[in-house]
Image (cartoon, rainbow, N blue to C red; front, top):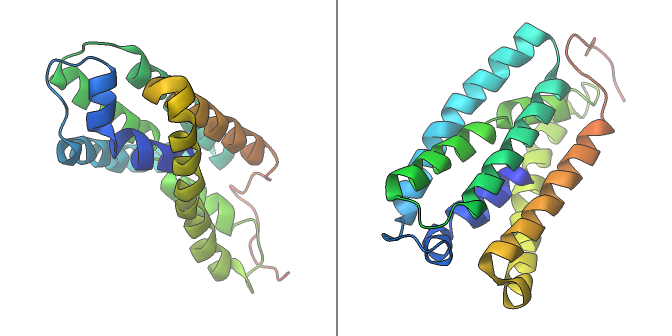
Length: 181
């Protein structure tokens, strides 16, 4: 969920956040997406490589979730920043959320060969679908907490849910995957 919170709310509504942060020049959402996806590509490569080196997908996913939390806090905290700083933070957010391949691998390896492909395609769709309730709660909280406060609440909730969910999964690196459910 934190991945799609970042993309679906922070990056998509980057002009609104730029105004709320008092930026002298309002960010362009297309450029925000560009820098975020460059970071995502680098993060996916890095997280996958680190998972292989450290022989743990869960530890890498947790590290990247925590890194996402740090860059969400940075995104929401620095007022009046330059456009360059803002786009650099979008790049950093992209990098931190670049654990999608590790996430999908963890999800698929939780199940036997008879339903693994179903899980591999379904789990990401559930996460993408989470953008709907995330956006609903963000919009609902905006009137009470403002743009930055609403994003902080929804972002914190998505990070906590991700950490709790990940803590309940089994480590899959090196697991024998030749079994049926």
